[in-house]
Image 1 (cartoon, one colour):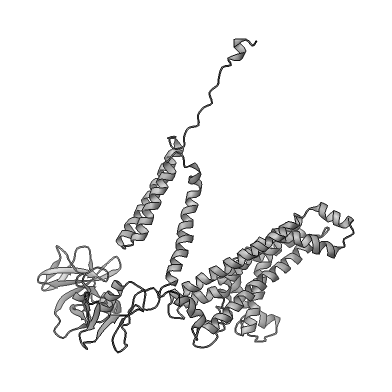
Image 2: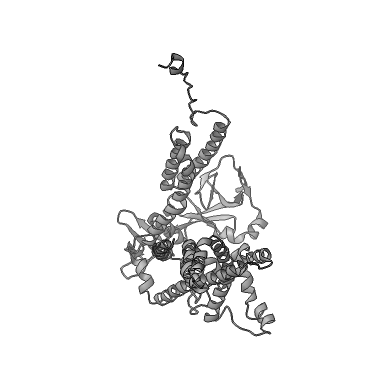
Length: 530
């Protein structure tokens, strides 16, 4: 029987870990300061969204702030603290972007349809303003505040100031001398020379009389006298019509987001409406776009496939040569080989654009004795140049990954193949290459996706040219993503059409996603080699 001294061992209580939420040490103070900065930034965005009447952004930001404070101050959310920032960035930069692009692809968002219906009505009323013969005139001074121009208008001994963004409002303590405004608190009055120096901006400036766009605006031609301009259009909210007061023509809304008269004439400002799958079918059915779309799609696949295949083969050959035992100067060669990979791609593309210049490039002038070969202006040579430059830029990456894969191959398997009598070619075909593809196939898939959307190389090297025809900005070397860029209208070469550009972006996403999924599924068969 054991003695009591051996049965009743003194129990040593393990110290209970202190909760991170109740540890008010230096770390908590640092966390408190960081969260204060995060909350201040979030409140700033909320106020800005409230000012712009963007209620969606406002409520999303409120939700994110509440979630952030709960995650970083609650007791049982330790794991969430590490993933919450990543989830926020995923929500903002991935899910929101994809969702908004999908929404735009179902609308007619583009030139003439950039805003809501209310904003379009306001723009129509403002753009159709004219000065009536009997419109009143007011003494006026051109004022400036922080680089923003405005008008100070004198009406019945009252001075009112407004800008292009803010309508006229009364200003107290303004000084009027001999019927002219000489001082406005908070504003600088421009003299004659300053008005002449910025004459076009002064003439183009329009200051609303009040919040109602039908009240008209104040404009000036000499910087001294302001005249009331009123719109020739009249908006009837009950009938939902726009009437031209000079001609009597009545415009009603149509399904395309525009005011249209009975004779088919339309007002030039419209609004965004849902058009269903129209943008998705336009790329295939539009007679001026479908032909280019098919050519560009085919070239996109060819360019992406050849870029991956050529860079992989060259990188693999160089890696095999560098891994040959006994080769001298391997470190020097490897350092030189990765130089193209170390230089930013867009800079290399610009340099090659200069080297391949038809008349002044070093390729033609030095290497080819002054021959004017159109490397970048001939459709076939331009595509060859893109593949060549992409090969130069991409093979160092393939060299690095294949070098690592070759060095990781199990030596016992190679030795067993040698003992079994397999020759070098059989060993390469049956063992080395399958094992190499097991580790490099996912990287080749990601490289295909990268080259499928390699906008930088196309934009910097050829700009998508040469053009298919003088009437379009689309060219023979455009790929789908550069086509999207041009169709969006951001480049200025085509009318803006964000709806069609978004639809094409969604199609590119689906194509790349499907190809990647199929390719990853096929690579599983290679794992059986292991």
